[in-house]
Length: 152
Image (cartoon, rainbow, N blue to C red):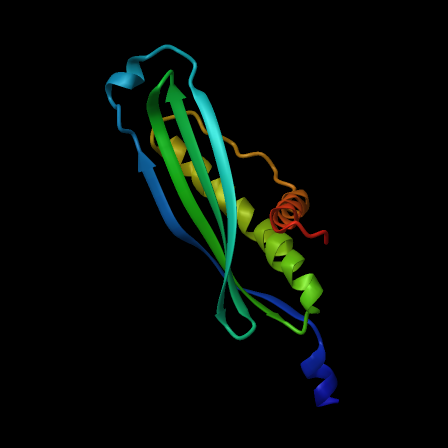
């Protein structure tokens, strides 16, 4: 009976935390007087690291760069991370668990923190859209397969 329990799949959130957050307003206060509509660029990245046997840190990084013409109005970069215990998951499913399930849990915290810091900086909030991490993961897998010249 104990062997059955030990072989059951385990997926537990140990902690979700804000790992890094920065805000830059390199052209303030002068640029704040501009009346032109700013351009907003949002970039996302997902990374995973093994912390211990069966314990993983998954980090979702969001970078929001807002410019008026060629001058930066503000730049926010935030890294939201989670520590997950993941055991007894088939190896072929681990990529999807770490690349899809974990980021889906971490991302709402990242969205909230980015929106909050932009608002606290005195700007209208920038709301990050919902992300389909499954599609993002599949695109990364396809790109990796194309880079190696193999088909998965």
